[in-house]
Amino acid sequence: MVEKQTWTTLILGAGAAGMMCAAHAGPDVLVIDHAKAPGEKIRISGGGRCNFTNMHAAPDCFISANPHFCKSALSRYTQWDFVDLVDRHGVGWHEKTLGQLFCDRSARDVIAMLRAEMDAAGATLWLRTSVIDVDATPEGFRVSLEREGARVEIHARNLVLATGGKSIPKMGATGLAYRLARQFGLALTDIRPALVPLTFGPEAGFAELSGLSVPARVSAGGTAFDEALLFTHRGLSGPAILQASSYWRDGDGITLDLAPGTDVSARLREMKRAGGKRALHTALADLLPARLAADLARRHGLTGNLADQSDARLAGIAEALSAWHLVPTGSEGYRTAEVTLGGIDTDGLDSRTMAARRVPGLYAIGEAVDVTGWLGGYNFQWAWSSGWAAGQAIAARPST
Image (cartoon, rainbow, N blue to C red; front, top):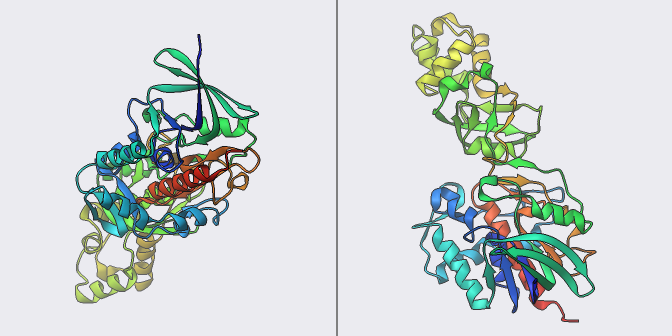
């Protein structure tokens, strides 16, 4: 016997966007998730302290085939609106570098806050619940679920796709939103891992530098980021690489500036005048960590003293440090990617309501949509803003 229930709104996914939407979508809302707890990506984010937004969140910090799409939601529910919500719930927070805002205590405080907002709105949450099938009906949608070993058939006027992307599959990511979007005629853009470490073959020799971090400027796809770079056994990571990975494409190269903001050629000439007898690799250690300086000297065959180098040779060495061109073999993939780049094509969605243009009552929010933020709280802000926008639209949707 299949139990049948009717709800006004069914939200698929109890992540950041789904819970935010549920708190604003009006009465008679059911949220489901196959996980054993809501907000699992919130819980693990920011080292367990949740980088919940960024002071500098603005449309130009997001990547999309339509860079204008995110403007409406981001302008109507801003980072300051979310900070106000956090403050009203007494969640302590602090700012780190580059405008990143973190919880003082635990990411669980943000989850508890969202649950409290859902409870206040009267939303119902079902966990350990899986989607079996979804169909359109004259009144809205019929969704077949499996919950606690039994089948439940939900009839809902509104259906919200808030199941995220394909990043971090160990957390249960499946790409369900993409499958359902296709089913209802919504196009998808190219999808790939983003905010992800880049890998290189063993010939790159980065394993010998594993664990070494250095400030750097990393450029990819015409965009550059100044943050820390980390050498790993398999390649390169760190914030600068994660940021650049969103602009990198298979087969393309990236460029590393290991001394950003420094005129390396001029510095080397100054050191040559001040002490020409210094070994070249020890002089480089004034600009870089000693282990990296020694490695670069070996890679480029840099031998002799500063006095032995012509100004042209010093300029060439400076180029090697400030414009090191590399071609990654790939990335660490969805296993370690923080987000999925691409998703449901925004051409099929209304930017103000997040509603599907040709499917009444269907909404898509959060990571499932082709809007991807930079590292540092931007993707959570998109979840809050898009979830809020959809919730407001659902609450205001006429009943007939």
